[in-house]
Amino acid sequence: MKNEEEMMMVAEEAAKILVKKEEKRKGALMITLEGELGAGKTTFARGFLKALGVKRKITSPTFVLIKKYSLLKKTGFLKAYHADAYRLKDGDLEILGWREILENPENVVLVEWPERVREARTTGAVKIKFKHLKEGREVEIKNS
Image 1 (cartoon, rainbow, N blue to C red):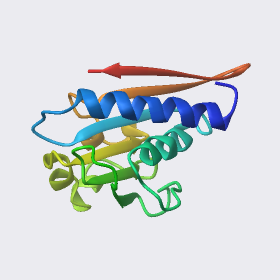
Image 2 (cartoon, rainbow, N blue to C red; image 1 turned 180 degrees about the vertical axis):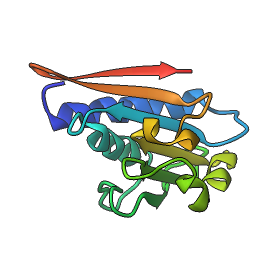
Image 3 (cartoon, rainbow, N blue to C red; image 1 turned 30 degrees about the horizontal axis):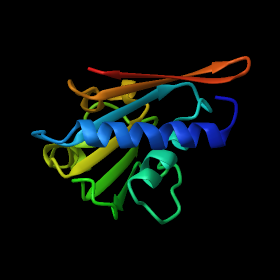
């Protein structure tokens, strides 16, 4: 991808595919966003959440750690959580109610910097990796 608009379109398409694919589940749809600073993680999250019907402005949760959004489209999901684990360490997410968020199958959870905390490295998460290239960005999506 060469620009923010292309990243947003990829994110919107990914949202459509993942939400349809993940109809029956025991817990939240967990999506991890991995990549260097400035690789497109927050831009992707904005496009993904927009595709699920979030109307309000979507910004990075860097300083608040977790942002919660109500989902307006009929997707089978009622809430989305966008977390930034960059400044966290193991155990910090549990204090923020992480277990309850992940146990609810009506939640979609996007986590930036999941490699920083154990609680964000969940088996069964969709892993999205972002890479800087000379001519834009590369996005790799793996369903583990």
